[in-house]
Structures are given as structure tokens and as C-alpha cells.
Length: 503
Ligand code: ME8
Figure 1 (cartoon, rainbow, N blue to C red):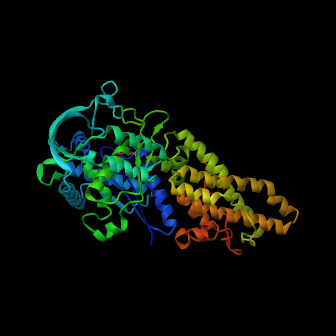
Figure 2: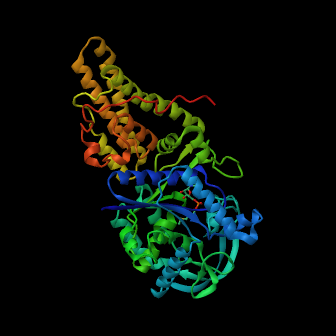
Figure 3: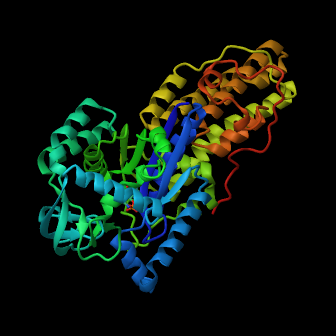
């Protein structure tokens, strides 16, 4: 069976999950559900990045300095509960303080060392604790890191270094010959320019940090958090603990990240893998960043949006739809609750929900809810456009492909006017029209199921098809016209996107 392994970044636990963190995880969930529908075996990993100094600072701020691990346990639990509340279908939630991750990191470090890619040196420079990375004067705006609005600290240490520059040519070659490695295409130039012109060897241990995984040969030093964190992707696949699983799952097909951490994932990470002789992930997709009501989302501005609150107000489907539709996947965008309401009322309520409810109601009224004999419909290019978009992680384009069908179906209702056909007793034309509409709904349920699981499930049921796990979701059944059997009993049920109560 074909496997599909998708990952999200692992998140710092110095605060609770925001809509930004949920964004990447929801996108990964959509890909996971989609690939399950293709009949593939799916692993979907997310988790928490716990060996960062900023988690330690957060523990201190919470008065938990003497109990950092306890603090991390509680926070990781909060993240897990949030991901469950968002109904994500991850198969693994990894924490980098887990013992098997420690084992994997040790094994990895030793392999890089054996390759001769680790050397001792000393470093003096500026370090941004927010980024957990060295920065230069040129990166600063008014003396502050522009991402974290804080000045960097001066760090002077004896460190171990990773010979990142030894992989410059190999990385460039890989990126050039594997067009899917860095996605979307627009990020490729950025990373190529960085690798070619700016990439230096990187310090991968800290002398002054007391939290983190000890360097195997020199436990007084702690492993640099990014070097440890990136390894999570293979720990979760079985590296160091379960070789058979590892061979089955690695390399990952898609690693989703935000554009803020592109360099770590498209330069440092593949170089680490090259050093130990492991295959590189098939693609790293870096999505954009969104603001909230036009402003950067930040604790200090107090505008951090809680994804669970949004789900409580509008439902899972609406939040997922909004995020994937409003912000082109790969580009930047803006989150606004007012726009979410508009999309709920318009796209989901008036266009999609209304189509489904109208068609099912007419079927009940005119043919007793019994699916009529097959008739020809109008799928056009919807499926190929949808599949291509899904393959390239253009999630917004996949939605657009489905929506072109929604719009066509709504126009078809208006043109055919089933109520007039019924009034004029044009039985055959009415039956054909209803078949086309019901069957189109089935195609929409298949396409939208990964994005809007509640809607997809609800529609499968109303179409008399049972639940998605009883259904062949895979391409031959999903895509072929005529899958809905004449004689099947449908039911209109409740509207799937009921009118909102004005807040
Ligand atoms: O960087 N828009 O973790 P982190 C879009 N631990 N995406 C957003 C977002 C926004 N406004 N805000 C956050 C780390 N994100 C490291 C990763 S991986 C080995 C280690 C998402 O908690 C986006 O995916 O700072 C971004 O890359 C990630 O959260 C950063 O999460």
C-alpha cells in the first residue's frame, strides 16, 4: 500500500496554540484526509518543541522555575487537547522531551560526528532568543529583531559547529533537480540565494544553556534546539527505535512549515540528512503568514485568535474553509472574524449549503427522495483541476475547482427550474434534472470531505451512501459519473450550514 507521511512544525509551548499554529495543522489534516481517501496509508505528525530556552523562560515567568518538566507536561497537554478539540486526525503527537527522541538525537549526533561534520570552535555574536538563532546587525530594525520586536543578546561561547557549508553544492544541486523539494516555487529563489550567498557553518551546541539534550561526548554542552527539533520528523517515523517503521515511512512526502522557518527546513535540515546519508523529504511546503485585522498577531497587542473559540462560534468546517479559502496557501493573508462571517453566510450558507438543501428537498418533494435513473451531467474539468491542485498543495485552488461545480449546479437549478417541470408534469426531464443534481452533490461531498469533514459526512448520509468509512472514497468511484445508484433513498435532513444567529 502506498504510504503518505505529512508533518507540521513542532510548536514551542511558551504560550497556548493560536490560529496561526492551527493553520498549518489544519492544512496538514486536509492533506492527510485527502490521501486517506486515495486509499493510501497515512502518517500525520505534529507535536511540541520542548528543549527551547524560551519554554524555560515561560516556566520561570509562571513561577515554575524549579519544575520546568512539570510545566512542559501541562503545556504539551494543553496543545494536545487543543488539537483534539480541532478534530485533527494526526497519528502521532511527538514531544521532544520523550526518551525515544533523546535516543534518536544521540544516534544522529554521533553519525554526523563520525562523518567528520562536527568541529569545535568559538562564537561571539548576536542571538535572538525569539528565533533561537544567531542574527547579524543587518537583520535588525532599530536594534530589534523585526519578528520578535526585541533586541538580541550577545553570546560568546565555545561551541560545536556543523559543517553546513560542506553541503552547499549538494543542496543547490538537489533543489535544482527536484522541483518539488521547495514549494511553492516562489520560495525557491529565496532559498537558493541564501544557500549560495549567505549560508555559513552553524553552531549546534550551547555552553550556557542548562535545558536541552546533552552533547553525547561533552554533556556540559547542550544541543542547539533547532538541531534537536528537526530530528523529530524522523524520530516519529521510527529512526533509532524501529528500523522497519522508519524504512516504511521515511522520507516524508510533505513537510508543511511557515515561511518564517523555511531556511531551517530547506538548508539546515536537508544538509543534516545528507551528512548521515538519509534521503531528503520529497517536498517542504512553506505557507505564508497572516495578520489579524491587518495587524501582526501578538500577545502584546492582545489580538491572538484562539482557534477553539472560532470553532465554538462557527463550527469546524467554517473555520477550515475560511482559512484555506481566504488565504491562498503559500501566500500571505489576513484573518478577520467579519470576513469569516461573510464567507459563512455567503459561500457556505447561500451557495453550498443552500444548493444541497434545495436539491435534497426537491428530490423528496418530487420523487419521494428516490434517486431517479441515470442522466448525463456536467463535471467538465473539475476533477483533474482539483487533483492537480491537491498534488501541488494549492489547497485554495482545489476549493476553487469544487466551487466552480457549486456555481454551475446553482445555475443549472435556475435554468432547469425543477418546480416548473413538476408543474408541467415533464416527468422525464424532472427526473433527469434531479439525477444530475444529486450526483453532482455526491461529487462535491467527495471533493470537499477533506476540507469540510462535517459537511462531507452529512451529505454522504443524506445521499443514502452511509458514512465515509463505509464508502469507497478512492478515485474510480469518486470521480466516475453515475456512482449514485438509481433507487437509493435520500433524505433532506437539517440544513448543513444553518443561518447564524447574529452575534
Ligand atoms: O518555529 N500565520 O515554532 P513556533 C501563519 N518550534 N502561520 C503561523 C502564524 C501566522 N500568523 N503564526 C504561527 C517554531 N504560524 C519551531 C519549529 S520545527 C522542527 C520547529 C505557524 O511555535 C507556522 O507554521 O514559533 C510557523 O512556521 C509556526 O507556526 C511557528 O511555530
